[in-house]
Amino acid sequence: MPTNPYESDELLQQYLVFHYATATEQFPYGFGGADALDFPKRCALEGVDFSRLSEPARALDLGCSVGRSSFELARHCSEVIGIDYSHAFIDVAKRLQVDGQHPATRLDEGSATTALDVIVDPVVDRSRVSFEQGDAQHIRPDIGQFDVVIACNLICRLPEPMRLLARLPDLLKPGGQLFITTPFTWLEEYTPSQNWLGDGAQDSFAGLRRALEPAFGLQRQWDMPFLIREHARKFQYSIAQASCWTRN
Ligand SMILES: C[S@@+](CC[C@H](N)C(=O)[O-])C[C@H]1O[C@@H](n2cnc3c(N)ncnc32)[C@H](O)[C@@H]1O
Image 1 (cartoon, rainbow, N blue to C red):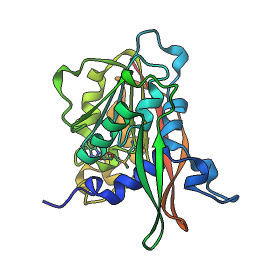
Image 2 (image 1 turned 180 degrees about the vertical axis):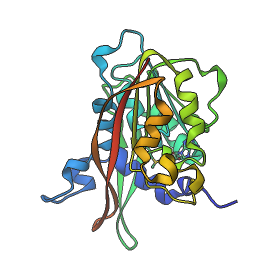
Image 3 (image 1 turned 135 degrees about the horizontal axis):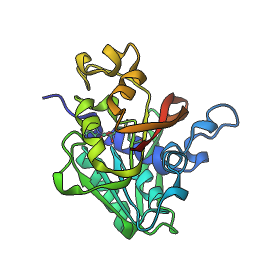
Image 4 (image 1 turned 90 degrees about the horizontal axis):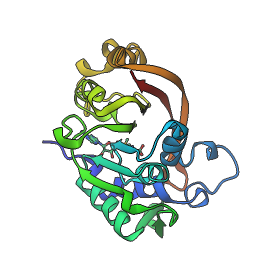
């Protein structure tokens, strides 16, 4: 069984920086890139129309990683559950929920690193948030229904994305909001090619749309850049396809 990269300390530190480090800590340059920072925060704030929610709202963050989007959702939702398959990510997300802060190691170059203390905005009511290790393809049956479900950059990391997509109609209340982002970076090591959406990823978004309609209506779609720091002089600049859906 190959090792899950999302259990490695390298990706744990990379995602702590990606989710929580300040703009300057992540990308200390005056050119390029800056429009792609704060992706996990933008996912919650741009992907959900909070004016449509009535209290008390429940939200589910699938593939939550180290939890930034979950905490952002808690600004507007009274209960947020974050689920991720990585034990390492969920252990740290739980520490952030309890302590509101966590050490992180930013890679600068070679063996040079900078010790950071990342924090959750103290204004966020962390008691609204809980984290669970789990598989988004096999969500526990007693989890209930949600006003908001987000799945950011998750579906092309699943062996069987259709298992999650087929479960989504049950997870959302009528009128509930679904927000999905994905760069459609299909890789055999995560998803066998016969399971790539859109007839082997000829047109992945058409495949996503076929899987979600008619249970969901497409509200809008757009491009969302995101920047992940590898080290001080190497960054991954990717463009996720973002789409908002309403449960019919
Ligand atoms: C590319 S990262 C995106 C994380 C986060 N949503 C973000 O936008 O920063 C993919 C995440 O999906 C998680 N993941 C992979 N397979 C999963 C599964 N079957 N169920 C739940 N989470 C999974 C990984 O552990 C990782 O945290």
